[in-house]
Length: 414
Image 1: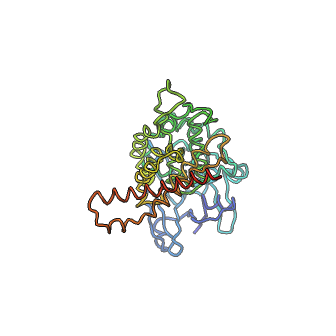
Image 2 (image 1 turned 30 degrees about the vertical axis):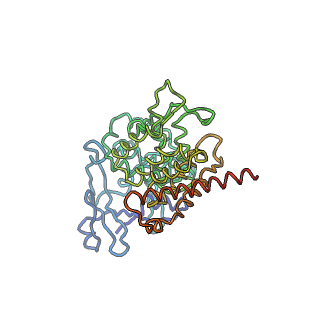
Image 3 (image 1 turned 90 degrees about the vertical axis):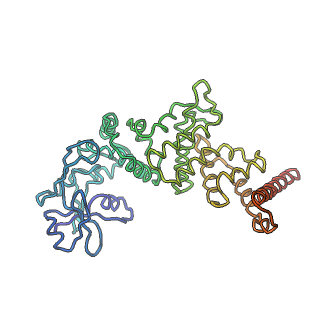
């Protein structure tokens, strides 16, 4: 069989990355021949097979012809006379349209290696416009490779703008949009995903809650970057530096949605924006069927981040209520996730990238101290019903208050 390694495996190998998944294209064969050689067919829309030993994916070379709207309206042909070059030209980007023969020879009919060396994301052919999902895929690749200096080729940028204005993006299902967004959030530079979408006009179409933040001012004293949309992407970039946790990154993306609802006559103040943003976050998560973990943390961060910023001024009882809202007694990891999102919020401002945030350690210490309350000992006192919860709550408040008093005395002595 004429087999060729294709796509991301070839690209990543040339970039010096470790290759985890390898896909192959088979030229000149039929479905019957593949099965006869022990391959198991798994593809529903086109012939894809699993190798009998390695279980890697082998697909018959194929062509695609647009016959309907959206990203599913394609007619596929996988006849034995389809050439490797015809298979490669249907792919999205030149850096993904290279192949490697079994003897190691690179097959690169569309200049993928050149674009790889020049750090360019360029479409293979004008058929790029036929699949609206490619707008999101390109933005994701831009986010994945931004740290290497990759940018979008000007002619490809023009195509993206055409696609965003065509109405084809409306055909994307919520599941596919979330899948691309999820992958983008897991890249080294997730903010670039949204920068690319904004530059071509797709942000307004797909993510209006974020798009509406651009042009909304915040107080220059606290936000030298002024623009709330820019601030949000800076926060997301900082979150990506702090953690790989997608829940924290998603919360960073959503934390200021409420500022988009502030009436212009109240700018640049945004009092209560954390709470006003909650319905927007819920709607966003319902629309794209965002996993519960991401949704719940995003709501909590929006609701509580301003309180954390003023943690030193909060009463002990207020801190305990904050932990109650987090359900931190059952889910203690949420405290750290909230704190990380708040650090990202503070550092996601022009000139504040290395700004200290002592509130983080203070919240951690208060929670750690409150957790030392022996709940079992309180229950053993024979209290019944709500009295148990009230006693536990009082004990936790006393623990935090004692910590606050100790810190006050320490500062006085100093």
